[in-house]
Length: 508
Image 1 (cartoon, helix red, strand yellow):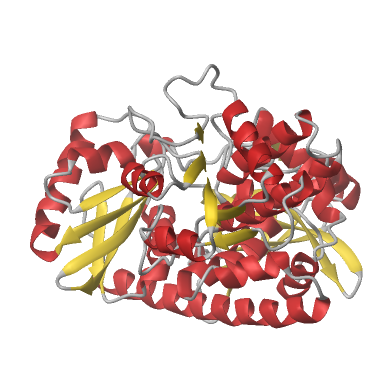
Image 2 (spheres, rainbow, N blue to C red):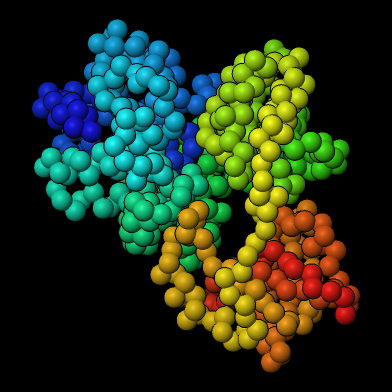
């Protein structure tokens, strides 16, 4: 960090041009914006910074060779990466040959040897003195650089806090554990987001129908719209939205993201329905191939994990008999380790323990399927089968306790996420009134209940198991496990619940 601060200080004094290189997901886009604003607060003059984001389809993850040409075009003598760079040794060597320095800020796993950069700021370095920051997202690492510049006196103390709305978005949307430092950043990030003056975020939340800020609204309303840009078009749309200066500019960009998000939903639904129709294999790891949009493969893999409770890879042909895909996992099955085991049958791949990308030749897909399933079996994992089992924090029988006062208390624990789970309530001794399918694809569910005092309560759930859709109030007695949500209809607020599990007690 000290080396990075020293190099940035030199760039400010010499009025050097700086190229920021990010990533195409929410973490990468928010981190790019945070880094640009950080440099501006530190004294880098307008016009001296340029942001470059990779194209998901042409470049893939990491530093693209195109950035060398771009750096030379804009006259940059310093490249700062966010959310990438730790394993891009060759690109950094090429930049060194052009006398262009590099500072890496990243949170992905590192190689045994660091690239030859001015500084590699990554809490996963093998020589890191502490593990307390290992859960930081890429945007969290970028924010740490902002804090270091405050300490150096280059940024006025207190100005950096206004970056925390973006830190919150990137951290939640990258599914980082919300304990320790992330808990601190997230707690204050929520307060800043509630007061944000960014026209882009204000307009995006309006278009998404966000009336109450929560981890859920960030993860399911704001995040998917920002991610839709990089999935189906260019991440620069999301970047431009976060940097928008006027409401008119923000409204135009938010509309484009809304259209892309609707297209994303359509593509995703088509892929999931095709896989469901033909059925998944009965092996421990799902491997599915098809002619699907490359930008939705990771979401589809995640959906398969939720539905079938198995790790999943979803691959699509990208030309020349090459398949590119995304994997999602859970529990103790580490995808990065699995891909290393399968390196002889794939072109390449890597990522996190729970999310990874892979490229495979068509002729090797069968080998890949056999190897990764053999690897899974060799681990003899225990407890995986219980990973999706939900446990209640509290049993409730009186719906009058599920009120707005309780919601206000629960909001004090926000933001929720891994390590700071949202409380789950089991609704006991309820009268099951009705169950109704909802949505265009009829995969969503609404359940109406009465408690013993005849007080009514409504539950909803999205993309539910078929067994839930077949529940019959005339036959089944249930105890739903739920998380509370606030419904705001025409300014009237009420408490509803999202179903996370349903325990069928017995038949009447």
